[in-house]
Length: 239
Image (cartoon, rainbow, N blue to C red; front, side, top):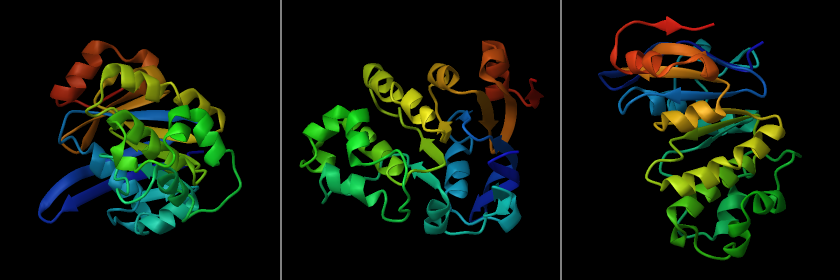
């Protein structure tokens, strides 16, 4: 049974339609990657799932419950947390205060506490009293991930976490994902770095112009499959 799924999901910004009938499924404990070029609809999909954008009630299901029309705080309370594109840290707060805000909307007992976040990203413990936005871009991304984990989510949504970061920094951040997976959380990663996405995901969805153009297990997708899905028009599905 899917933990999270979208069914014929559409989304628009005024007269501009960004998503056209998107169907994805996320199983318990599964990591999926959403890949695609700029403007493919990846961030709109994440904003829809997280409740930032309101959608038709039945278009998004979580544990078989329709949640498409719920606002973001209700989505978080149910166990879906997002690491937003651009990090969106609170500049007036310290690293520790930004992390603590993460469990404000969902206080549940789970593996993620301030100390376990510091164990995952030790540099944050050293910088805990610094203003969060005074950190390097990679360290700020660690704060954003830690803040989302503080709600002990069942589903972690990660939107473009490697954007603008040096490859060595990206590797350090992605090195934390096996530990996150060990807790049993499902992870949805939106990523332009295809190699990174294929490396961590069980399954991949490729999007183009608001539609899913390719689905399959990451181990089954060839470079040619992905190229066609980015730039072609056919929908391919690999078992």
